[in-house]
Image (cartoon, rainbow, N blue to C red):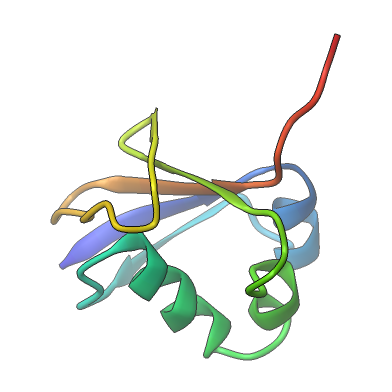
Length: 83
């Protein structure tokens, strides 16, 4: 399937891009994250397991077991604090 992946804040800075369109067979957001990590640097560091990274699927905060769909959008970003 073809999806758009968007990166925000420190993840975007680490990867040097705000978005990309890619082909994937990932059935969950966790599998997509692992697929991106397997690309090596800088993905491996920016999206590393154990690192706090939030995910959204079609602009809704989602758990790692959420399933992306063809033509969908996935976003990765660090936790946000504010006040």
